[in-house]
Image 1: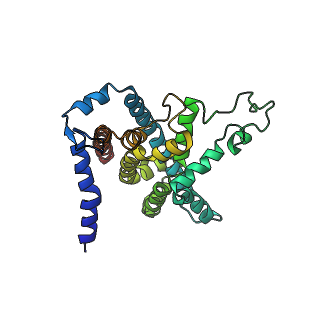
Image 2: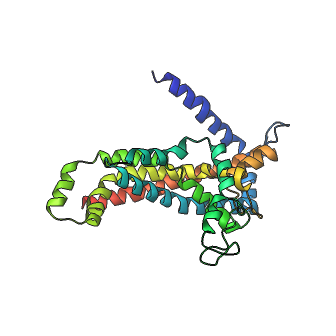
Image 3: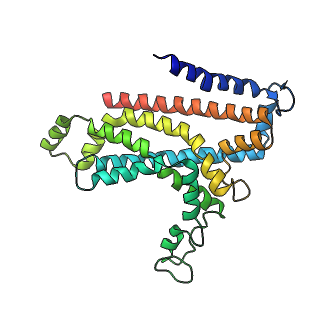
Amino acid sequence: MLAPYLLGLVGLVLLPAAVTLALAFTEYDLLRPPRWVGLDNLTALVDDPVFRVSLTNSLVFALVAVPLRMLFALGLALLLHRRALGVGPARTAAVLPTAVPEIAYGLLWLWLLNPLYGPINQLLRTGGENGLTALGRTPPQWLTDPTDARAAIILMSLFTMGETFVVLLAARRALPRDVYEMAAIEDATGWDVFRRVTLPLMAPVLGLLAVRDAIQSLHFTFVPAFVVTDGGPPPYATTYLSLFVYRTGFEYLRYGYAAAATLVMILLTVAAVLVQWRLIRRYRAFYRL
């Protein structure tokens, strides 16, 4: 019964990963056979300014977007875990953006973020004069200002936390009621209940989701950066590792060099998993005390 899954795992994951690992140490342009170059590709990445910018952009995105997505999803899960009027449609609205195809989602945000006619800036101009906001400031230039463009990519990622929300919602509904009844008997405040009961019980789930989001953050940025900002505004404000790999491999036909950048992404993923796993173990050990 496991055979179909194992065949897919080997054929679609393990073998491509092994080929990518081998190509990372070669020079390959699809026209000529691969030529072994050893560590030259990795050395060239260190001196490549575009790669350094894309690496920095990816790390900053992960450090900012992952905690925000987790907090956003956790807040919604705690808010919507009880049965109440309108909870069903609210849960559906939270999950719905995840079901939209990525290209369509990117094109939708391309319209929403239009600095002149987009609904977001039109809303921000409400109450202002001469195209300014109510605070007298210029609305964000989502597609032309480097800082605003990075913020736009992070904003787009916040609305795709549907899967994280569903898992946290299920985890919250599965928590035993007796511990909350005991907390109510002891007149614990809402903050104490969250800090002493809810958060420790949900910590393993939160930890696994944080690892998953950290891994996905390296891939999520591809479609928004490719469709919405095209890697800009210049120079390379929203060029992330995923977009760097795509352009290097499929536009410039430097497959060996792109494979070396992919190897760096794999190493970053492994490092993120190890760091977060150690933090989770320390957190759980602290609460056992």
